[in-house]
Length: 193
Length: 193
DNA sequence: GTTGCCATGTAAATGGTTACATGATTGG
DNA sequence: CCAATCATGTAACCATTTACATGGCAAC
Image 1 (cartoon, rainbow over the protein chains, first blue to last red):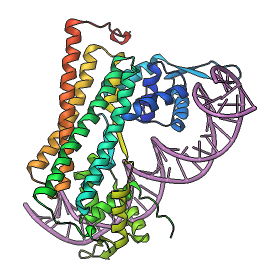
Image 2: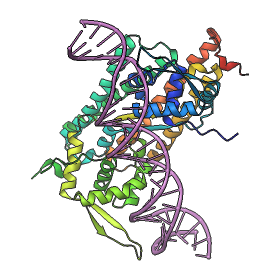
Image 3: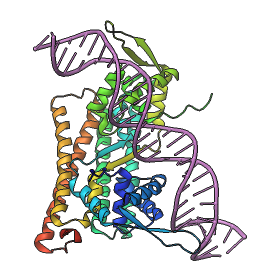
Image 4: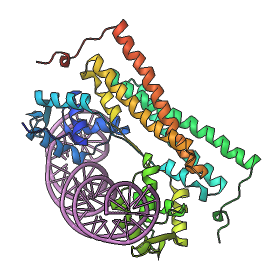
């Protein structure tokens, strides 16, 4: 048999969430929004076509389950689908690990800013992590995470944001110390025309 | 005048790196590979067209600076470019913060795995963070980061990976305790056909 | 009866990555 | 002379996002 094509990014999460019991495209999207988008996103426009592809590939099956007049499709893993999921979970040697952290990028270029602006960049970063942490805290306190590993990843994200907040606070102290003890020369930007 | 289009992702890093003195497309790409890709990626195929667009938009200027027969373009910020950079650095209210962490996604679905496999998923995640941390350590010990804020972001990434390593180690203990104290029922997957 | 949610799906546009294609310079 | 690095650029492909389009059902 031909080597099975590696699962696309969207296929990875669709397969996993179907295994968790999220049976419709809509439910998968809702679950992504509620929790996985923190570490693995997918958009509605990609999910429906992927469901079709996975069905054609024999990794999932559909059962029609209309609500009155409106169509509804319930998806389940086939044996091949369960095997593909397990293969990905166990055979993946170099998992993807990418970040798009605009607040860090801005901090990197902060040498063109004034001291006050630098502090603001840092404060914005801190606020962002606080918001994200608060969301997760609310979900945890509502006991939204039934599954052990599901909860574990939420706690990971929560602790990660808490760590980032404390990092920002430590750096804020250093930036302030700058002003008090060792004034740096202001960049051109400090004196606009 | 019309509201200036917000900078594309590639434009943000190109503008910032030109401000830092990376004058050619090649140099920008090299710097991305060496350091920024840890929090903000860009690919060579996107950089050259972006340099063209930014030139057309009047945010940067080119000076031809051939090396012998082969062409070389030196880019510099115009005043408008410096202003656009500053505007992005200071006006950005909701900075992008996205992650693609496949190791976390795998951990989330780990309930379909055996105990041994779960430990392996966690160990793979730990190894990944160790590799990334080691890279940054090597760069820091070689004193590769001249600029203060440039070094700061490298240290951020380094500490972040160290935090993740310690998280993995703590969880590994819990997973092991599972086996010793409170054996969980093995999933179907433990007894393949 | 109307608002909001459940539910499905498509089409166009965007944006980015990969591969390709080329060639000069530098150092061993 | 050969390999590595510097340097530029294009084209095809891919994947994802956004907007559009539709309509039933449930609750107030």
